[in-house]
Amino acid sequence: MLGLEVRGLSKRFGGLTVAEDIDFDLRPGDRKALIGPNGAGKSTFSNLVTGIIAPSSGTIRFDGSDIRSCNEAQRVKLGIAKTFQITNLFRELTVRENLRLPILERKGKGYRFFKRANSDTRIEAEVSALLEQFALAALADTKVADLAYGQQRLIELALTLALKPRVLILDEPAAGVPSSETHLIIDALERLPADLAVLIIEHDMDLVFRLASQIVVLVQGRILTEGTPAEIAANERVRELYLGGSHD
Ligand SMILES: Nc1ncnc2c1ncn2[C@@H]1O[C@H](COP(=O)(O)OP(=O)(O)OP(=O)(O)O)[C@@H](O)[C@H]1O
Image (cartoon, rainbow, N blue to C red):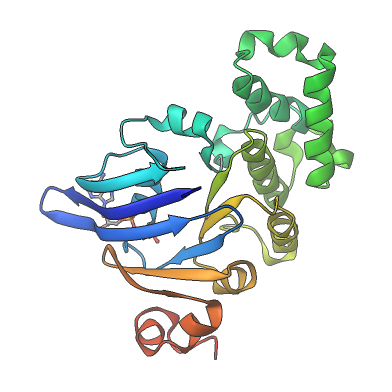
């Protein structure tokens, strides 16, 4: 199968089971959301997939190959990427300069090449395409430190896309973004490449219901149910446990 195939995935921290027997598929073009109460194990699941932590048992396959022995960097090279965190942005560099970095990384050029990168027309063409895709052209030469928070989160997304991932894990892409700026994130997410496999971990249910075509509900490390937004909104147990009766 193309994409991610997770089977029987479990993770225990000492006596605490935080992921239990999780089966999960993510194929090219999928738009899935992972929701669940605080402490349900959403971040743990994303860390297991990206290779930040190792599972206690179960398998993770990508395009049919077992990737359990691959570390985080190797999984990024295979095409499994999680969004950069704002804390990883170079605040004193411009948007354009920040965007060059993951492109150099992907091309294996290393940061020593950074100073000369602006004379590499292929790298500059990629930077321009990303600026265009994320409607950031007008801000290309602005320092990241001078951008609004929502715009900085947009840069995180653009940086991750510069790695040309095939699986993109978005961990709370709109967290902390003022409501006046969430449209920036939503617009960008709606314009992601159609064949990209996307998993959104998000507490903002409006965003989830807007972007996801499938929703997986995690409770105490286990998948409670999976379905379309309409099915999840109508599911009594989900409403009791998580949605608190909203999203009628
Ligand atoms: N390194 C660790 N050692 C021990 N316990 C951990 C570790 N990492 C996470 N946990 C525990 O695993 C459980 C799941 O945490 P996790 O962060 O995956 O949940 P979450 O669904 O992402 O929560 P939130 O929505 O609050 O971000 C929690 O009980 C947490 O305390």
